[in-house]
Image (tube, rainbow, N blue to C red; front, side, top):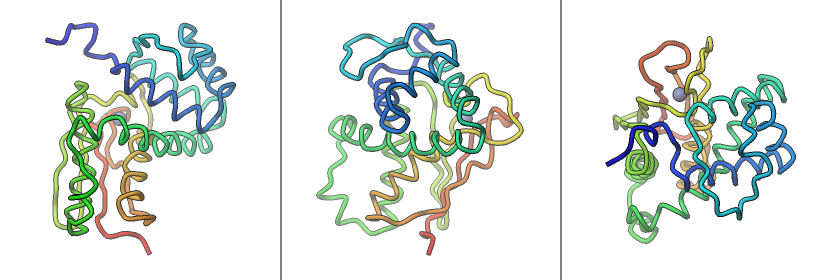
Amino acid sequence: MIEIDQIHTIPNKLGWIFFHAIEDVIGHNGVNAVLHEAQINNLLNLFPSDPIDLLFKYDQLGKIMVAIENIYGPRSGRGLALRTGRACFKYIFQEYRPMLGFTDKTFKLLPWNERINQVVCFLAQVFNTTNQQNVIVNVESTQLTWNIEHCAVCWERRTDEPVCYLFVGLIHEALYWMSSGKHFAIEETECHAKGNASCKIVIIRHPLE
Ligand SMILES: [Zn+2]
């Protein structure tokens, strides 16, 4: 049973994955500057090998996303959030693949369309089995939609446009890996931060030319 104060806390392993990934993108000093800007002083000077329990809350992730945009500017900040999402994939895949029984051998034998379904559903399962973010993937013939009910990325944010670039980047990298280097059109069409009921990311199955 999950206690109330754990509901909006990011599981420790996922929290560390996020900090590994953001450090890969903006460096250790960059992470400290972002934490300082977000006024999350208890996580300053983190090192990836620290065995501490992060107690990393959804609203802190939302504040970090805002801080990145404040420091680097909206446009570059979004680019960095996308790259951080992309950098998360290898760590997530490495950590959760054994737990969720995702095996490369059988995966590689599957047809293309089925591989897309499986890799996107694998990511959804990571968030649904470790967390209360509630991701529902709708599989259709030309596209998949990723609906996330309690999205931590835009938690407590209010914006005019979708801002969950971290998830867009994560899905982008998963499909890039799955297709051995192809790019796909992946767009967040609805976002809780701009007043929609949930965050919705549309993934077009056919790769871009
Ligand atoms: Zn969101």
